[in-house]
Length: 431
Image 1 (cartoon, rainbow, N blue to C red):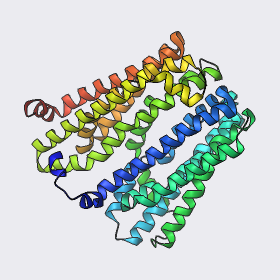
Image 2 (image 1 turned 120 degrees about the horizontal axis):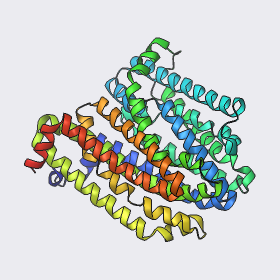
Image 3 (image 1 turned 135 degrees about the vertical axis):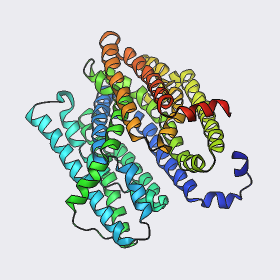
Image 4 (image 1 turned 90 degrees about the vertical axis):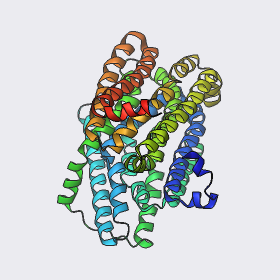
């Protein structure tokens, strides 16, 4: 398979819509990573380590709520758009209903946070930062990435994403210089993101001829009910992977949160690699699975081995260079951050172990198995992280997150052995 790719003319290879989608998705993720790396030392110098920890804690809460705002549309909506690419009337109704649903969900999530803050006095250390961070929910609600994925026109949205992140970076440099201004960090990210999203919506309306209709509540309800399993699968996976900082906030001070979140941000950036690989290879893997089972097994095995090699290189490099990485990002000596980063460094490698299992779940459309896997993983993570953090602090939490990746792999292996045993046996007998 890989050898055949070398025989294709480079121009033909680049013009392939699937390849373009992957490249532009990679550009979006890479720009997010780059801006994150550049902004971290600027924020730490400007607002201090303790406020940096609270800003990241607020961001963790918002990102969790963004799972609600997304409600599985990141997986289901591109397929709907792709099927109706040539039908502008159908596209208009799809776009109108999905945007309406996401804005409604963002409003509900915002109301929950406002009631929690002002009605029940929750999130005491970072209430103002969290309230100002609500702008990010509406930035997520108006992001039309799913539409451009389905239309296979990712160039514009990738450029727009880079532009919004550059505006955010400019805002940090120009306006955020002391701890009292920490509430504006997440707000500015959401503000610039939503502003750029509105320009994209104007483009969709003006140049692509997509009309915006009043929401059809019956259609919205139907789409929400059909996405319930996807939503809960995404939610469970997200809590298991990104919930550590929220757990730590119940046991430690803001300064420790800041040092932990610095190391965690580095690792969470690298942990995107397995997800990007799955998104890139899934369409081709699905076609091979239907047409040629042996070719699928060969292809998926190569993908797994290459992924393990790449993530292994990243993990070992991060472990060995942890002191240098923290020094560059923080421009200070933070031994605790270095210690945490050394432990978390192997998360990308362990997460890559599960790539083959996830591909198999997807090609078999086994949403129930993905749901069960994500919530078993989430339950283990919550129990392990709370106990480990209570007894061993942030170091215990780091080991709990490391073990969560191992448990997720074992759970997925069990489900594949139980429900896809024939394919698993073929993997070991035909390779």
